[in-house]
Image (cartoon, rainbow, N blue to C red; front, side, top):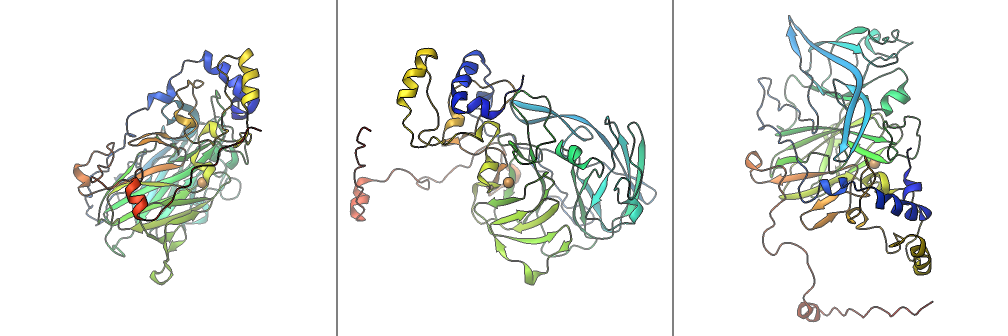
Length: 445
Ligand SMILES: [Cu+2]
């Protein structure tokens, strides 16, 4: 049986949910407690012979390429994969080479790539190289440019990557199902001659959205509006690996969006960045506006660059508020301000300990010390250094450090004494002329 979040946490569901909670002793919510998300430390910013810093795909990998003659040869296997979105939530998705998204394909302008694609799915597939300008027969639209790759078959794609940039790959057969189940990946083509200021860090993040009902084994590819798991590189916070960078370094983040339906305004705290490229090419210097949020439309890439000035743990997230929620956080009845005491009293006769949730807002609900159903996420994010971080989903952390090579990516920022906001000092309040009126006493209804 799969229950959806409405049934689970709806007002009636609060009672049904409480019963569920009483039965289920899963401590998945607590499994992640008291530790920072483990992050893959990016390798030291070593430049390759071609003069670029290799791309880091947080929570992911790059496709190994063998040089055969003058061709770089890679192999993608389209297959069902187990994906752990965050500790406590797994599902059978579709992807490439054991993961979703598939490995990032990294090449240099002018390279000839030969990519073999083996289909281990139960239905046909194809691969489209989104944004690359290549010969038409390699473009991968099943029915239009090639016949579909049948289950068990291996196809060969071969093309020269003529234009440096940030691209993506995904199936162009049964797109709705295959992309929704996680089949996507990034393509990075470095310029043969470096252009623009030298970059010290280079990251690739692919946004996605999923409908994954509590208890379900697979995401639902038929969903078209009501997504409940939002991800960077198919991970929800706290499963997302942080981006560890140095203060004063030039950082590039390549954002791609192969969500089924939604554009994502990606916001980064503590920095001002410029959009330097899209999947269509470079943005001329004269057209690069400073921004703190970049809208990444479905089927697009946006490349941003910035130099962080301030060390710290800076939030990076989609600014759609429902996209930083997790499975259980959507679709609740509006109860803020409601007086539910009579309902609670009556309900507690049949369900001891019953309490309606949400009457004082929804903050902190993720940290409530209550068990949740197997294979589900608590409502929100995870524990932080000052309490619970009330964001999950499409959320990660930009960790700016003085010495990133020696920093522990899973450690929180150490704040200089006296630099953290806290309760106001009454003497200081008075001296500054701030009068805080006592809250009005609420009269009984
Ligand atoms: Cu979003």
